[in-house]
Length: 258
Image (cartoon, rainbow, N blue to C red; front, side, top):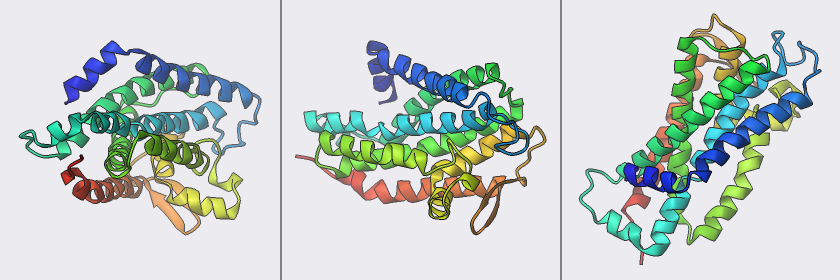
């Protein structure tokens, strides 16, 4: 299943090209937009490049993972999914795993481009340990969102409805996170929503890595309206998010489609 996705990518490389160009443009344009912002505007004497790069990394991975259900939906509409579901799979979670491996591969390529481009606009480069932590965080957010997208592909009646859901939740989740602005800039009600948004839990630890070379898993990476969260706490919340999503979609994976 995973090989099939990469064969499709090889035949339609525009997907990868667009996926690399878009975050690069976001990073350059937003970086230029706030180029003369005061260094201390975003805290810890960080420039906007350091602040923005984590948000672009996670939102790019999130957008790719949110679209993961589209190939499954088209397989469903063409009748191929039923053949897949009756195949002797060790587990139907193989469908989720194949899509996750595919999306995480694309996300890591995009992440490498973003990290490289952000270094040129003054964000610097994280350490090797920091890069490893970024890979782990990207994997966690991609796994959960890919599972959510596949669940929608199994639950919704067709690709029109799936595209509608993607369009409705994509940008609102971006603006209801700390991708473009810190919590302190937001209205109180939006701070509460952003503090519950899984994207924020993925963005803030990466942002802390960019801004603090001496980070550790017990470092406090974000302050919510109800308390401070450590690096390991945020990772645990992302893991719980993944588990909840995967358990929620398990009944949907057993469905048959006419």
